[in-house]
Image (cartoon, rainbow, N blue to C red; front, side, top):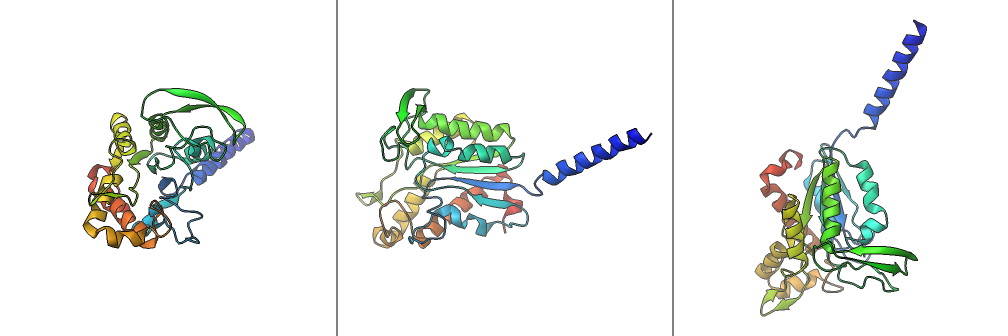
Length: 258
């Protein structure tokens, strides 16, 4: 009898510990590069990413917002550095993962400076290289291959994947913002469509907003270069992200907004 009681108590303790380990609310994960989170997110260099302002729109008593984007990363290196694996380990049913990569994917595959590039496109091509940064052999895949990996592994954990095309740079031609509609924006959409993930065309939406504002007023949003926004620019981009999320009725995020 005593032995049976001991086993029952042990089972109850184990169950209680498991329940305590479960998150008490879903998590909205944000991953990407410096246009999503610049530096440590404190704007010490006057540059901000749009992800730094997403939490302002949510009731964080109902949902946690974790901006885990980091500057300089591509769809490849965010994975090879182990950052994605740590997120996957914590993902649970009902969590959200919004992702934006592409700005750094066009670099070299194996240069001695960063070695962060991916193969162009969304196919299954790959190339084995020696990475001079990690000093290891590595098989490099296409941009689409890495994006599929994020989506599929999020879905395996019953989380909701949201793909964003990269925000546009402050590049203008004939009065229009140059879009990446024949490259990363196109590929991001194709992967999202093929994998039945949600998609936000930030590249086109933000470019259209900049054109509405005009090049002279947009220029101050980019104090250091043509890629990284200041506070005002990042807030405009964050607002577009949130408005896009609100418009996706099936996403069921409404109850988490302020």
